[in-house]
Amino acid sequence: MSEQHWIDLRSDTVTQPSAAMRAAMAAAPVGDDVYGDDPTVNRLQDFAADLFGFEAGMFAPSGTQTNLIALMTHCGRGDEYLVGQEAHTYKYEGGGAAVLGSIQPQPIANQADGSIAVSDIAAYIKPDDMHFARSRLLALENTIGGRVLPQDYVKAATDFAHAKGLATHLDGARVCNAAVKNGTSLRAAVAGFDTVSVCLSKGLGAPVGSVLLGPKAFIEQGKRWRKMLGGGMRQAGVIAAAAHYALEHNVERLAEDHQNALDLSQGLGRIEGLSVSTPQTNIFYVEIPEAACAQLREALAAQGIRASIGPHTRLVTHLDVSQADVRKVVAAFEAFFKEWRA
Image (cartoon, rainbow, N blue to C red; front, side, top):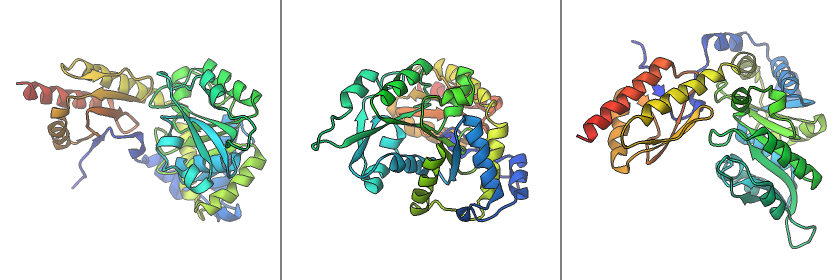
């Protein structure tokens, strides 16, 4: 008996590896990556570094870990990084920089487009004074809440940071989405950053893993933190093969996810009582009457639709959400609210 097909809109982390990706995993030659002799991991790291225009790369189990490794390599005990209030490295990764790295975050309000105003960055850089943590790093995120940072802003912010003696790091969990949206190369999308974390298990569809990219000496230093944080893996080529397949085959197809998000948002936007944002990429938000949320959640689940329904609901499209799925979701919402308002 076949399993039920769920339409899962909670996140693009829920993607399942395709048959071709599973075949690549099964055929991958492996070694011990802690010793540096897993050929498939090494191939992935070299491929990703070249693709994004960096000297070296390091494969790790998660984007949370590659971000933390970057922060701990850029910053020492008593240093600080400047970061947006909405950024994952500040808000959604367990406070790891502070807890495990003794690094102080300096959160700054994000603008409506997801950026941090350069004037605010300037205002929060600390003077060289014993009373203050040492400002060392500007950390940005792209995309952030589905929004794509304007390229001219990224250049202005990273140029300013470098002029002030700060290093720059990009949480590029969905930077491939940003590149596809802007119609730019991956190298152009990460220009201006000293290091970048790229997640491979979201829209790109790999089951696990992220790569940290940067200068060779930086990556070598980062490997010490990876080992300390429990990220040293053994025959990791099995999952690195999936990550490599994702980078080779699943970048340009992100445009399909963006179109599906737009179609879904427009369909839901026609329903009375819902306020729907317009997606730039594969993420958008729906304001839902609180009184309807519990019943809507149950009604959707009964039709095989998973969504994190609440008054402020995030919906995310990905490679396992088809155009037919979008139509089914819109119809399910329409049917529910027609009955709910009756």
